[in-house]
Amino acid sequence: MAITLDPKDTSNRIHELVWGGFHADQDIEWIITEEYLDPEELNLEDFAWVTAETARACAEKQAAEESWPEHTEFDRLEAVFAQLRADHIIALHKAGNTLSEGHEDVQEIWQEAGRFDSGIRGCCFYHSQDVEGAVHSGQLYLAFSGGMIREPEQREANTLVVGQRITELLQAAGFATEWDGSINERIKVNLGQWRKRGFSV
Image 1 (cartoon, rainbow, N blue to C red):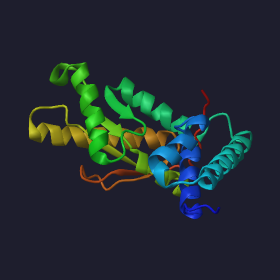
Image 2 (cartoon, rainbow, N blue to C red):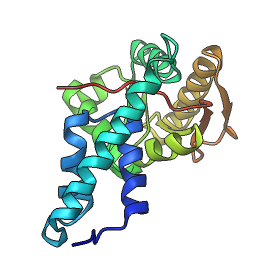
Image 3 (cartoon, rainbow, N blue to C red):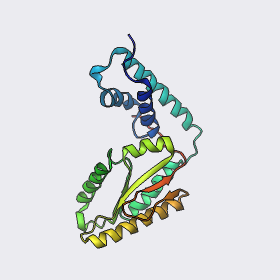
Image 4 (cartoon, rainbow, N blue to C red):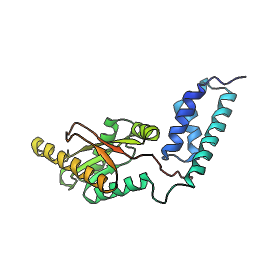
């Protein structure tokens, strides 16, 4: 019996999940077989192939991590996000799978904090598809907003201030950025590489 899945496509997806660093090694095989693929369409050879390919990818990344610097690009990015949070700007890693889902995550935090009386100045986030892009290209796109203010004009002005603060902190952390200064344009960050250490459970 031969495998029925697409090995190239599935291997690429495993690579994105492993090198993305947001899932424990023990969970990736389940994500692939239960969420990415249809388990009812897989045969025993498919499951065995996924097990072996996931183990190979995880071992490859673990070996690579041994030569990584103490503070990677992701660690520097998290330091920027920590400063944004200190500035009362919601900063989220891997918020949902799309821009709309990311904004939903932000809205949930904002509401829990007390909405307009929360003191939150804005938000900054990227979603899971952005992680996949960063794994391959080393470039990350950040969405941002200053939508925690009632008045539209003031909200737009505040969004620009938030965008400027984000780029300022990123550049201070040594990252090259691209942004046209528009509230409708996401901030492009050149990380060089996406290096986020994994974890186990």
